[in-house]
Amino acid sequence: MTKLFGTDGIRGIANVAPMTVESALAIGRATAYICRRHDKRHRIVIGKDTRLSGYMIENALTAGICSMGVDVLLLGPLPTPGIAFTTCSMRADAGIVISASHNPYQDNGIKIFSGTGFKLSDEDEAEIEMLVSTGKINDIRPTAAEVGRATRIDDAIGRYIVFCKNTFPSDMDLEGMKIVLDCANGATYKVAPIIFQELGAEVIAIHNKPNGRNINDACGSQFTDDLKAAVLEHGADLGLAFDGDGDRLIAVDETATEVTGDFLLAICARGMQQAGELKNDKVVITCMSNVGLRQAFDGMGITCPESDVGDRNVLELMIREDAVLGGEQSGHIIFLDHHTTGDGILSALQLVAAMRRPGKPLSELAAVMSQSPQVLINIPVSTKPDLDSLAGYCEAVAAAETELGTAGRVLNRYSGTQAICRVMVEAATDADANRIAGSLAELIRGQIGES
Image (cartoon, rainbow, N blue to C red; front, top):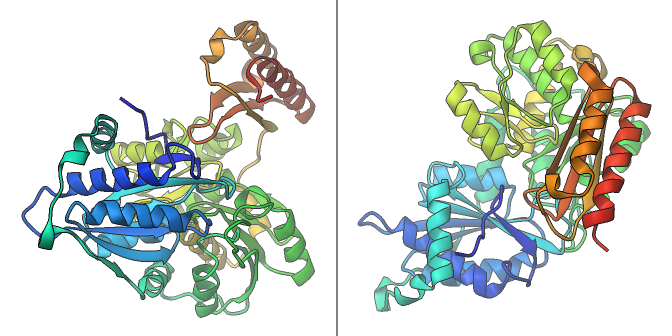
């Protein structure tokens, strides 16, 4: 059976399998099929980011869904969490996001939410894969009045704006604050400036003019140089960077220092704890989280169960552990009291609320934790064999771990959404972290690096 779903939906180069029109048509049909489990008219929501290929995939998905007798509600460009919210609020059977998140514009992807706003279950994903790869879906064809229709929802942006604003404390506003927003030329380009302006902030928006090809292009949550420069140029209180589909947040403080997801979690956890909102004094983190975050939580009396990488894994552990806050170093943060998935704009609002309560600048709040020296090297790879099978790899890792002792650690893993191997090393000093990570990266690059 063909494997379609990775750690965050289906992803690949647009117009190359599995992200072809033919595949999207079949995926749309299969998704519609698994939704038709009740005797009523069914509806699936479709939204997208700003990639050029989104139009092509949107039309193929729509045709496939309608051919199965299910109606389509088209939202247009909207952040991934906005599509999850709309799926719930319109009581649709499922929501589909056309996006490759933080990947370059050449890529695209398909994420599917259930009618509850959570990512589709493993069982449903497996059934879609079976229906598509076996061709079974091709034999199910409603006719005449039983086919579906597509309708564009013109007020989807307005609905999501109201939802986001309602997560911000009603006794606060942003009057007197100057905020720079980097919209990554992606799905937040329209909604994010409106939300912060309506709450009273002076907003300077950058990278908010998408053309289909400039999404995530040296901007957004992975590239904060322009945001840092804009914060200093405008004397802003902070800068906020989203990724292409709007489910990540990375901040920049008033001194133009980057504030990663680990710091954001620590700041928001402390604010929620002081307000009596941190249920069970528990925050879910991942294996990539910096040891400094663990130490900060220890000092606050907060337990931090650790999940595998991926917001889906974070969410599953949050539910099992009865936690309301969890997230990743990359800026995926889930506030389960407010939403079912990571939401960059919602996270930004909670961060600003954490600043407004004590009236402190972001740089002061970020002192809640000290980051241990950490180096992350991303290596483009041609294949993804078991890393332990590489010549000399196990010996090199064992030697590194012996040298680091209790002062650091090594964590190497493949990306679940890209052809990349990530080498992460924490050490007592920057020099040690850089040296050990560089050596391990060179070993891996020499054997499976992309030529």
